[in-house]
Image (cartoon, rainbow, N blue to C red):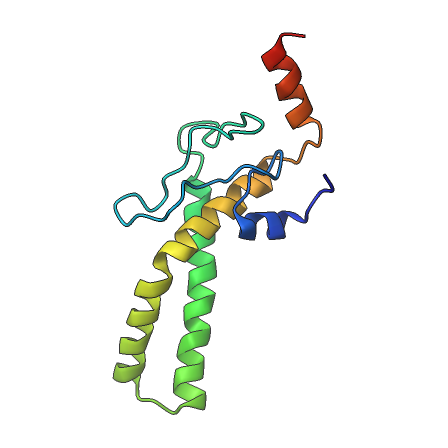
Length: 132
């Protein structure tokens, strides 16, 4: 399989090592918004390599959502010429709708930044499972 760009792979929410396994369990559940399997079903990459691994993803989420919401407020105030209170109400609705998207996307980008693609990871796992 040809290597994908890490941002495309993060957007698809696939395993960074083999680029085939899903990072999150499907379907989405509100009770478990970031439910992830313990490891990739294809290459056995651990999705939480160490305790607190996704702490950095919190900062990514803050940065991405901050600039996104700043852009939304700019459009509402400048283009639509809304006053601050109705614009803030719209922003709160947009924030509630996009919260889980930013949460999952920041985790996906974080692991894709730190775990590198290994085209032979699937082959290595198959040979280890057969005991060769």
